Each structure stands twice: as C-alpha cells, then as structure tokens.
Length: 327
Ligand code: KG4
Ligand code: ZN
Image 1: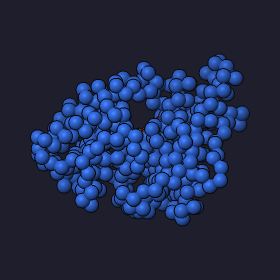
Image 2: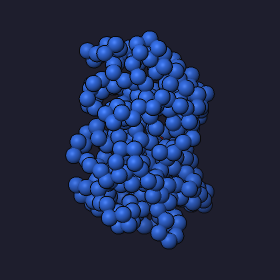
Image 3: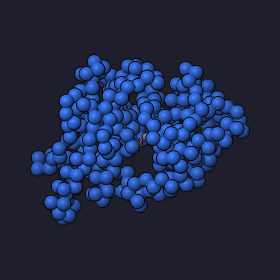
Image 4: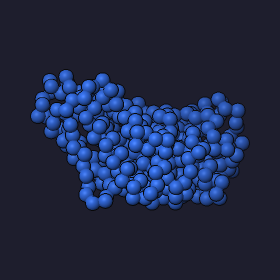
C-alpha cells in the first residue's frame, strides 16, 4: 500500500512516498527566506510552501516509479503548526483527493516525529518513552501503543531547539542555529570558568524550563563584553549545549525510573545533536533509539509513516486544522 505524506507545518516543505511503511522517495525543502529574520516569519512560510509544494510533488513522482493514481492514502500534517502553513499542505492534499478520490488522513505533527523512529527501527516496540525535542516542542511522552500517549513532562517556556536558536542569534549564528552551535562546541576544550545552570523544577516534576538558561547566557555575555565573547564563542556554545543536554538527559533518566520503562526513543530536530546522542547512549545503551539526522528534522516521511499506522488500524480521520493542539 502506497502513502503520500505531506508536511508544511513550519519552515520545511516536504513530500514523501512510502510503500508498506518504508520510504520510496522523499523531498525536503528548507525555506531559506527566514535566515535573514533570525526566526520563522509565518506569512513568508505560507507563501514559500505555496510556491514549492507542487513542484516537489512532481519531482517526487518523477523519481519514483509511482503515479498519483497508485496512491492509496494521503497523510497530511493538520496540527500543530503555523495556521497558514498548515492550510497550504491541507489544501494541496484535498486537491489531490478531489482529483483522484483516495482517502486523506490528518496527522498530528508530534505523532509524526514519534513515528519517525519506526522508519529505521523495526525492532522498537511499545511501550517506550519518547522525548520529542524540536524548535517548537520539548516533551517526554509515555507511548503505550500507537495513539496511546501520556505526556509525562514538557517545557513550561522555550523549547530546547528554540533555546539553541535564540542563543545562536545572540552569538551571531544564522537561524536555525542548533547545528552551528554543536559544530562550534566541538572545537572548545573543557573550560570550568564557563558554565550555566540547568533549571530544576522541583519535586518529581518532569517538566523543563530553558528560559533561565537563556537569560544566564545573555547576562554572562553582557558582563564579559563583546571582545571576550568573540574569542570564547566556542566555549560558550559548549557550556550552553552541555546544560541543555543535561536537562534533557536528567528528566529522561527520572522518567525511566518512575515508569519502569527503559526503552527510549528520541525525535525532533534536537535529536540530531551528537552530544545528546553520546550522553543518552552512555546512559541507556542499545535501549535508546534515534532516527538518522535527516529524519529528525521536519520531513514528510514521518507523516507518511504515521499515516501508514493509522491506515493499518482503520483510524483515518479527515484533516481538521488545529494550529495549537498537543499530541
Ligand atoms: O523538528 P524540527 O525540524 O522542527 C520543529 O518541529 O520545530 O526542529 C528544528 C530545531 C531547530 O530549533 C534547530 O536549531 C534544532 O532543531 N536542531 C538542533 C540540531 N539540528 C537541528 N539542535 C541541536 N543540535 C543540532 N545538531
Ligand atoms: Zn517538527
């Protein structure tokens, strides 16, 4: 069975074809227009999706041997995300639906990230703990089965990726800054004089808070002055990354202890981070699963895979745009 996945919830325009849950072909276009603004500009995102989605779909079908009439189902992100951006993907899906008649299912973007884990790891089984850490979300879910998720903790302010991007902006890196911060940090030796606090929310809370860390880096840089900061940028990146990774790892360890579940899946753009992978591998060994980096950041293959899971279970649902829903 063939699924066409469509993802346009933020600043990646992506379409993907899956056969029996495995990727046949995929196209991802990362919108460059936002770099100049230091963050995603919603209206520019909608327009860029509109200008790109059809050409990407044409290229997708051209490079696979599948025709549009062979698609059994379309899976399109309908929540959460930027309203105008979601509408472009949903409108495109419904256009194909009216032309070819195949069913369309709406997909929650976070469930898509969760399902990205299954694209390369057929051995991953429920129940597991899922850390979804991206530019828009940071939360730990207990995943008991497909469609059965309990949120154990989430950020009370910034998402982890958002913190990377904001600190990147402060340090002069282009948006999105996560990868550049990781690369800069790799050049820095351990420097005990640069360290930042990791917020603890008290008790047995599995929530995260990254806004204090962001403020700490900001005041630290202000106190040291531009010249010092320019010379010690790599060290600041290293200490900042360490604080984020510690916060994510610490809550996962507590969640595993509290739930008795030690199988962990990590998804979302921040799951690309090599230091996070190293620390979690050291703690959970072969019990921690990551998608490969291209499947961590936003892509339509994960949306197609979530569609496949819905199709198999007879759980298709008509797209219903909800820009601010959770998982
Ligand atoms: O999942 P994603 O593509 O989009 C959302 O759903 O938000 O995640 C993008 C986020 C950005 O904030 C970006 O800076 C971050 O993922 N990111 C990273 C790395 N690569 C991307 N953060 C840390 N280290 C990385 N290597
Ligand atoms: Zn995402």
